Length: 124
Image 1: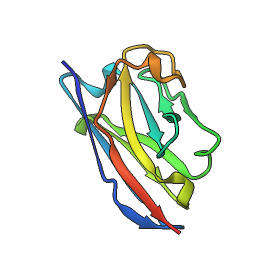
Image 2: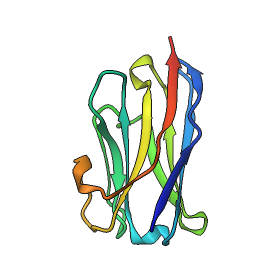
Image 3: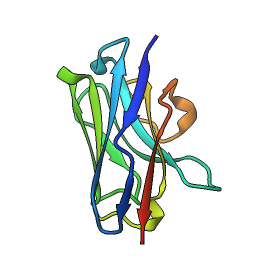
């Protein structure tokens, strides 16, 4: 059974940066297509970005392009979400998700495994 554990969320000032981590256990990271989602208060969960378990295919939501970067460290079985130029609209619980598909999906229902989330709060 695969488990995902996010960390790194905290209170940060607008304009600041933050790096979130997601540790995968149970199987090797290379077995999964990985994604980041977020859910702001009173809103539906939304796609942030994802990369395929095969190749270098990485996609981002428009809100993340140019500010957020997803990376992976297979040796540490860890996925990262580097977030720069944060603003109040980035305040949300951030989740990592995994799926064994080779295709990168933006829809949350395509992901079978989820972490518990980590809270990011951006003060303006």
